[in-house]
Length: 130
Image 1 (cartoon, one colour):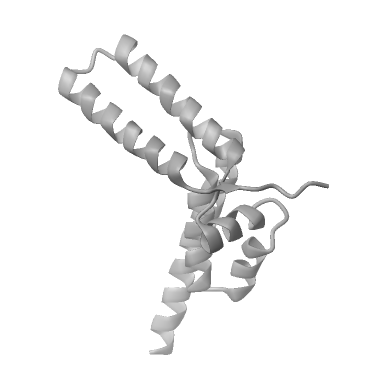
Image 2 (tube, helix red, strand yellow):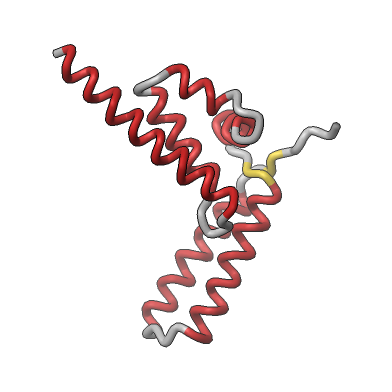
């Protein structure tokens, strides 16, 4: 039984590491969202390592956005603008350059619109002024 606990913790720690890495990459690639991956890493680490969970929760860069989402469901303004911009740019490229069938375009545009509405209806994270 103890062996199963170690395997479970190792699997969750591995998942957390993968999600954390994807979140860090998302800082540099606007098409990859940082916050959802950090939230997934936080969840995985909460099932494997309190130390790694606390590392993300108190991290100088990622901690404020994770805490804002967990406590208030808030998204930083910069992340909102970036997400909407990338979705709009993707939609324009799909419509004019993809050659996808109409039903595929409409489905993709509907999903993007749903995501945009969700993002825009979340509270905006207020950055502290220094």
